[in-house]
Figure 1 (cartoon, rainbow, N blue to C red):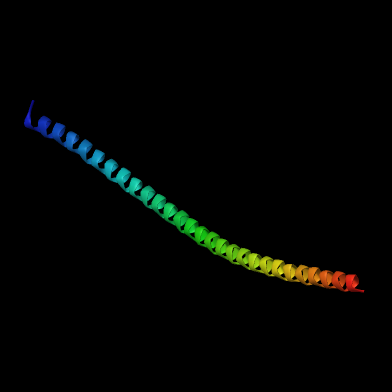
Figure 2 (tube, rainbow, N blue to C red):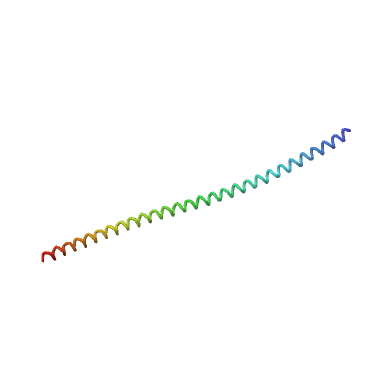
Length: 102
């Protein structure tokens, strides 16, 4: 094999290496772009989930406040009803005592 043949063969081999390196670089760039898009998508979804969680938390706190207010109102109504019943029982007892005395 002559020097020229060896050089031609070496040029052919290095051209193949160069082409392979170019393909690898392009593939790496494409993978990097896809990875960046996926990271962006995940980041957006995480932001959406965070917003939804905060909204859910606010709603839960509002429901807790409403429930506490309803319990307070119910307790007050029971107390008022107890007072009315006690007043009625006392009035009936007073009426019965007066009725016996007469």
